[in-house]
Amino acid sequence: MVDPVREQLLASHEEFRRLAQEHTNYSLRLNSLIEKRYLSDDEKVEEVRLKKHKLRLKDQMQMIEQEYRRGQSQVA
Image 1 (spheres, rainbow, N blue to C red):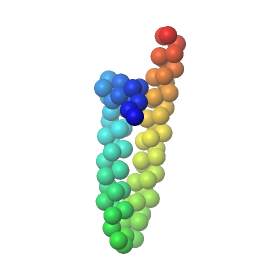
Image 2 (image 1 turned 90 degrees about the horizontal axis):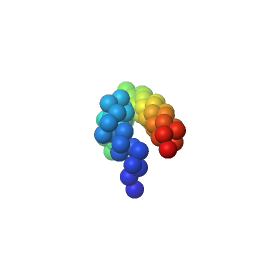
Image 3 (image 1 turned 180 degrees about the vertical axis):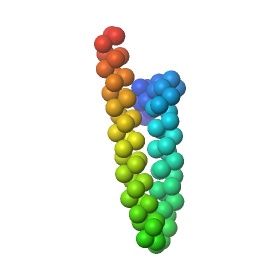
């Protein structure tokens, strides 16, 4: 199910859209690492780094969503 708030933000909020794109890029890279049978030491470090960055982006996106929802509830 698609969240209408997220859809609205993707369509109208440049920062949210940028964060979402970065989050997707990190997900794709992580998936390519996960598919490997063995990871080199550098790849293991990269995996941890990507997971942290991805989580940070998700937190930032959630903050924007919360601010948007608060703004919508004040208008209503």
